[in-house]
Amino acid sequence: MNLPVIPTSWGDIDNQFRLDNTGRLMERIGTDAAICGIENIILTRPGERVMRPKFGCYAYQSLFEPLSTSTGRVLGAEILRAVNEEQSRGTIENINITVDYNNSAYILSISVVITATGQTVNVTKILVQE
Image (cartoon, rainbow, N blue to C red; front, side, top):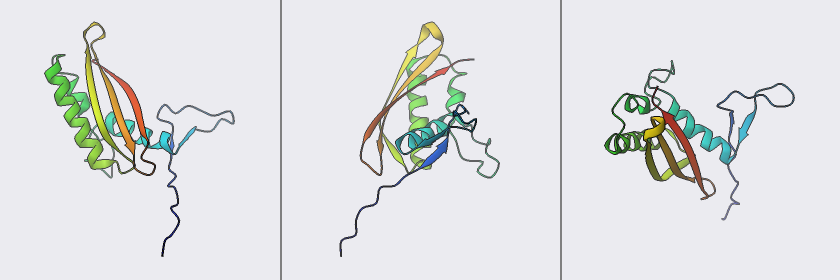
């Protein structure tokens, strides 16, 4: 018996806590929600979530190391590990880290395959040394 495939829909609040035109927190839906989840993993330090102390990524620790391509590779491996452990809505197909020496930052270019649709989405994030 063949059952119809029902697309999966996800929802998350906006990471930037922006408000919509009614004054409520904006909601991100579908592919945007999957990308929001990946951003949450990257930007959350382990120990920040009270009931999930292992949730998150050690990306910020790399920001206190010397800015270099080798540190960028370590950062990429950590992001890949954290996202693969925590995210079921999408998997990282490719991650490229560019060192921006002028701005003391790493530019993350991530290709994510959305599990429900097979669609590849490209995400760019900038992590700045503080």
